[in-house]
Length: 157
Image (cartoon, rainbow, N blue to C red; front, side, top):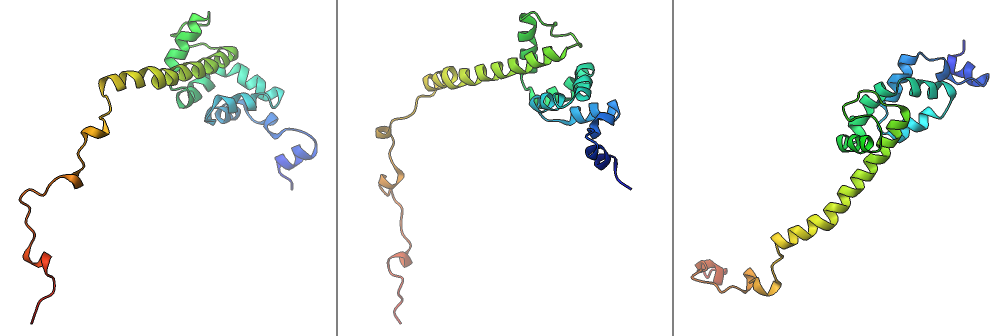
């Protein structure tokens, strides 16, 4: 007896093509990045159809894992003429634009932190100059006494 996958592969059929839609939606939802979702969706007509018809369900599962600035990306999408930030309905094209927007937002935040925040920190907390620091090894020994054994570790008998 042969398995479904070996029969399907032997006859040129895709084993996922015959899987229930609910299972395919679950597979999409378990992916960690939208680039993986998009890559899976383009592998065959059936998976593209599942992605196109179940975009919102898949988006709600994957987005929290891979779009840390989702609320800002959604506002950006709304400003671009997409659905309102509060809208529960997104098309596959909206999700593609959201992913692109999230990259843009994250890059802008990173650039802001690298240039602006760095300058503000240096203004608020200037680095001390080396000439103002006295190294501990250069400080005089004030009243520190050595134990009597420290000078002479050899006992005479």
